[in-house]
Amino acid sequence: MGFIHLWGYELIFILFAALCSVAVSVVLKRLTMAGFNSLAMVVWNYASASILCFLWFKPALFNIHFEQVPWWLIVILGIVLPSIFLALSRALTYAGIVKTEIAQRLSAILSIIAAYFIFHEQFSTSKIFGVVLGLVAVSLLILSRGNIENKVIHKKAVFSLLSVWVGYALVDILLKYNSSLGQGFAQSLNLIFITAFIFSLVYGLIKQKSILWKRKNICAGLFLGVLNFANIALYVNAHIALKSSPAIVFAAMNIFVVIFGILSGVILFKEKMNLKMLCSLVLALGAVLCLMNAM
Image (cartoon, rainbow, N blue to C red; front, side):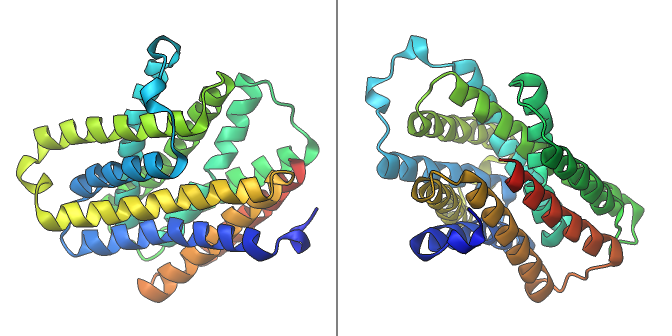
């Protein structure tokens, strides 16, 4: 099955999921530039995402067998998720949307490498080729300075991009491991969101208590949570609609996000593409298509 089979409501699910994903980055960058506090927005993002997850997926939270829940895994994800969100905010500030979205999508490369060692998944020729292309794309992305002349800012951009790349891969690996334990998707996701809210709230109360309760930060964070959850819900619906072709959903989602990310970065924030970034983009798309073919 190829992209020609992607039509109707399946395409709408993926398009809007990609738009919501990029919208999170656009809104987060805009609001941070306008003086909104990133940490506070991350906290309230998980508050609304938790509520929406409960209302939409209707997980059986009140019938949980506590002894059967891998709490250590839930806690790790509850700490990692808000940490990555903060890294995402820094990457958007120092490296821009174009680089950040490409780095985020290429996190699948690390997930696949980890799957080989942890889950003993086999490597096909297409998968190996996709991984190599992805690693080269990340290298070019990191080496590209763009318009950054300040060495300190460039180092912050590199560190934040690497944090996003590794962080999103770590989340994907941990979620796959959680699934292998037989935990229900909706229940696990809701528990992870709630835990992320609790940990980020406690951290926010310790670090920036006064800023945390400002109305503008609360409203902005709640709105980010709506976009964040909409991205997940639509992506899940796309997989359900095309359950026999997960590779198509994976490829379409990643390609759309990269395209929308580039358009928003160039049009909304006047980011410029240099040769290394263009090469990284082409290689990233090639890697996605190779991985799709390997699924």
